[in-house]
Image 1 (cartoon, one colour):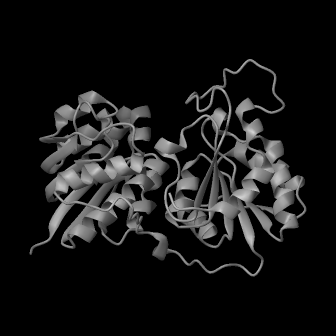
Image 2: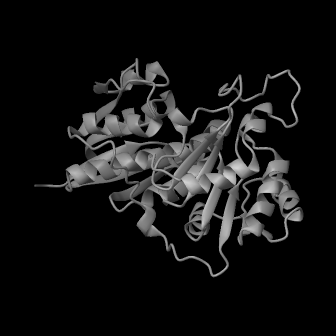
Length: 342
């Protein structure tokens, strides 16, 4: 049977890109003649290349192009992107994002355009770009929704209980003689930030258990937080700035990971590293980490999960956001004793 060429359009974000990998694994397990190309925001272009079924990664710079449209046109960046996108006649083009921006890219590609119907997509107008529209019910985890979309677009079935991101084998999982725990303390919403004092207390618990603490960061605010946590900890290292591949290598060598609800937390899950993830404002049933060696701790609070970027709780509380008063450092550390598969 001849190879079947498929283009994936999944531009961002970090977690969303990682959530698409199990669908690729499902597809090649059902049909090993499938070959994938992938359009992705340039900042995440490393990730699809880690999967053995992805042949070509086509970077796109939608974020910078929107800020500088005139420069984009006159520099030739947009023309070169279109040329690369149209260089291949695909059998199937799958918009795995369901946004207007991703549907525009899907519409430019050559091949049978597939995507979510207007009742299933995050932005219903995107459905008008597709020739084959699929219904995928809401109320399910994001990973499962993408897996269902691929299965319908490429006509195969899959086992929901068999989850394989396909990238764990790309990295060396050798463990350091000095075992360490990675604290993924940064995240994009203020309401997803576990309190700094809790991280410091947890660092002490980790030290007492024989682990050093490694603290990555992605911006200056996170760097300052990492320094404060390290200052309150006997054995802690603030890591240098690193690429996504560098972050993956750091996580692959970790004995344990503790994560706020963040993209790097999903990377730890994809690499099958024992991880306890903390949820306050967000719903772990819809967007929580999935995979082996994963445990979730969700706030048991009257307004959680609120799904708000800004905390609106007006009552008295010892910590902020208040919901995290129900997720203590000892609870988090003890979570490693109860790791189960999600």
